[in-house]
Amino acid sequence: MTRKTILNDTHRSLGAKMVDFGGWDMPLHYGSQVDEHHLVRSDAGMFDVSHMTVVDLRGARVREFLRKLVANSVDKLKVPGKAFYTAMLDPQGGVIDDLIVYFMGEEWFRLVVNAATRDKDLAWITGEAKAFDVSVSERPEFGMVAVQGPTARERVVGLLDAASAPVVQKLARFAAVEATSRDGVPLFVARTGYTGEDGFEIIVPEAQAPAFWNALLAAGVKPAGLGARDTLRLEAGMNLYGQDMDETTTPYEAGMAWTVALDEGRDFTGRAALEAQRAAGVPRQMIGLVMDEKGVLRHGQKVLTDNGDGEILSGTFSPTLGKAIAFARVPSGEPGQVRVDIRGREVPVRVVKFPFVREGKAQPGI
Image (cartoon, rainbow, N blue to C red; front, side):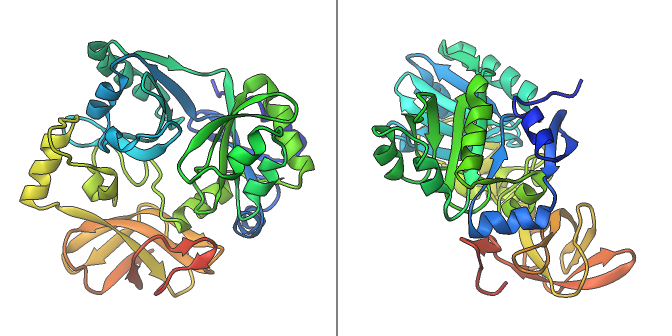
């Protein structure tokens, strides 16, 4: 049965076009996906991300547990509130899921994992936690709203009480803090996001989520749907689980080497497989593509390189750039003159570094 977030009726009252997304009834757009995209790049938009899964880990050995569970080194997180992006791997080095880890205290870490992988993730985490006597608690009683864009932070800070506002105003990137709204609602405010713009992801008690959403509306923040979220994240060079990586790909094959820490003495799950792959040579690589001709690059299209064929992973028309962009997985090595097979025609594309867009502007060479 399709699941609904607490904001479902709110989306419908705003005229949202609703679609099934990983078993959730979610807003695709509220009239114009392109307008919502530009709004986030130029001002501020908000997304219902209440379908994401919040998991709290507690116990005396929770840090030790996370040293094994994730590919990045949790020892980087020394100050309460700090966070990082990483992946959970299986013993073969495949990506079970990508996630954000928040360090809240030596016996409390918070994870935010993907909605579509919820059951698989919870089963894996719970199974792995037993040996460390760590409690694993899903927090379904929370909603979550992402407010993103150049003016997002000031709009959110304006809704906080006098004690919280200055603390949140000074919050560093990839950090979180517990705060309180002007209406007395407890919030978990994280300076993270999935759009390439500044802003916050805010965890709010589910019962208060509609009122918080409406307060943001009254503060001038307009809603944005999954369509804009997808074009924004691809422009920002951010992976989508299940499309750009999964259990059949390692972080090295998914442009995620930066999320792996091979720190000495830490035997995380999948480490041996990654070290073996790196020693033998990573067979595939993820590259960014731009198409200067008219048309759209789409998932599944064949990519032709000097080293053999690959395929488009995520592809879209970029509203910011006015041309098609994509991630592709291709054989490793210098790809040479790359073409994409579009309905039997080999269309030339350029290989570029991603992100394609940073803070609203095209990156050099795009």
